[in-house]
Amino acid sequence: MSGQRGGGEPVDLADMPLDQQFRGIRIIGLGMPMGLLLFGIIVFGVTGSLAKDDTHSELTGAPSLILLGLVIGNVVGQFLIRRSFQAYLRAESVFLRSRPDPLREVMGPYRQYLIKGWGLMEANGLLACLSFMLAGAKLGIFVWGAVLVYFLVTIPTEDRARRLVGSAIDTA
Image (cartoon, rainbow, N blue to C red; front, side, top):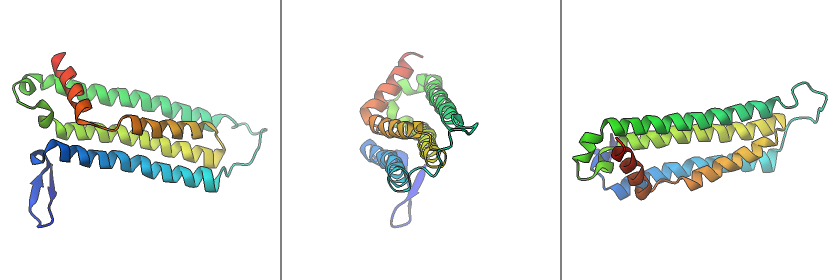
């Protein structure tokens, strides 16, 4: 993967020191929940729920059920994304074991793994806010909070990445 430097010459991200690569990943990983936090503050604090209290509606629990279905889908999606990344690592385990720094070799796929998982989480957080704003689903507040906590708990570090890569190639 390449980027551009100020002078215009392309730079290969794989050539960057790992601490700089992780700094870039953390910027993305913290930027997503900050946007979600701001959106949530606007929805919960300023806008509130636009739904009318209509307890006679046939769709009273539908937004919460839909949101719950999305959360379950997210959990399954997170599991599948992680499993896919681990399968990739196991398939490359012979090559990775022969390298002095296996993590450096898989930083591109590791970034993709993180961004896919974060995208699923961010989508659930945004939909949770919208379900509260449009339908008054109180579950939306809790899902939004859980998504923010997830982002803060799973901030990528080099140590976590090394453990993930190491455990996958050791079990292959």
